[in-house]
Length: 526
Image (cartoon, rainbow, N blue to C red; front, side):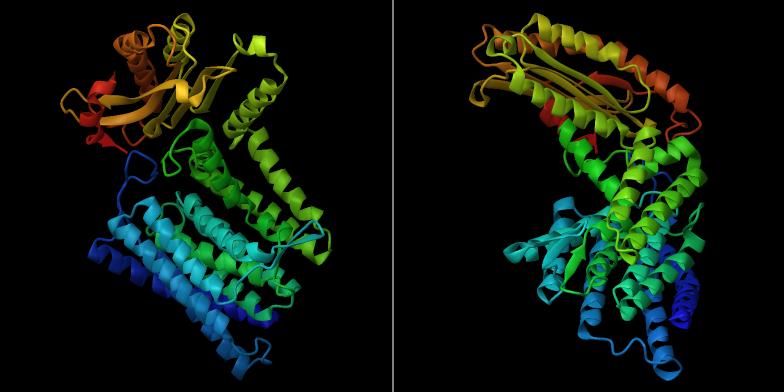
């Protein structure tokens, strides 16, 4: 198997070194490039897309060469390529096509998700299915849940790799470690063909990394990250061929880093009330890049992947499932304890859990007067207390049930969430709810940028509530100087390091009232 491993790596790396420059030239020729923006992208000039095409082509070429070598020169260890591998290839090509369409023309999140579900469902329907889940030595039979659980697992893998692909070399580095881990896991489970395929994937990513390392000249794009995610997800299922059991401890351990990022993103958006499709600069690669620099980010990610992958593989070889869990805990503890990533999300989760637990033990009389208050700087160091504290004072004086603010200034890596609410909220049918978008407008144009939202909840039967809501709308303009002051200070700190450093003047912020929300909706930059 040693020779097959070397052949698979050499052939796939060589293929990548040939295919990637060709795809890069073609992408530039047809204008398929990723242009920088101020929302979430770190690069500053257009970069060629289509790396996923080169990676998939290199993977298939390397795998074909390995199979031919094994048949004509080797010992025929790989055996025959079954129809399952052809179905995986067709599914990967279909997912890659969806990604290419999104890279070139942009798709809505729900459209892309629907197509992913259809492709994955077709693949799962042909036999790639998890019938039971094993965790720490215990097995749970899924029964009728087998189909949806398998589809969900593959969706998670596809989108976890997609979410983490936001910096030069990031997804490629993570993908290399995951591929090597799954190759060793396949060997441990007796799947020699799966191991060869995983080694070919690792080799194609190594070859692609030559062109994707900082500063990258080509990106994977959605076509690449989604395709790699699907292949990794399927291999994680196939790597345990005995009884179609998904050995949850090992695959999740190997995939721990991208799963951390996607879990934190979902938690952050859910706990702050944002859309699940909202963009921000609080992903793992954004936060680590800001804290450690680009080279430091890749070193930290590589080290964490090495730890989680090594312990996950060791858990299978030594039949000690807790080792995979140890790797997950060590990586997560490092990120949170050093405040490198996930600390704000943990704060939000702990505060919500604390408030919920408290509501079970407080007396009915106390619940009428007690309040829950939380302020969490999600990202950055802006002094948003000067904006938030007057809003809390207003809510207290005017007996509002809840007020919260959620800010997302992605171009300066700034995020802030604060909430003040009564322990006992009014019945949902008796609530008045108002939501204001917070808009930044330039002095020359009417186009604005939505930097966050302000939400107010009050009891509908509270005397004079409509007048008080109207009063709040009138007084929001008094907070404009404080907002402007904080933004000016933050932009001064980030001048020279952000993508808006060359902006001629700082835009003057305004709060959009409910009356002009419709006119503003068409001009918001999202």
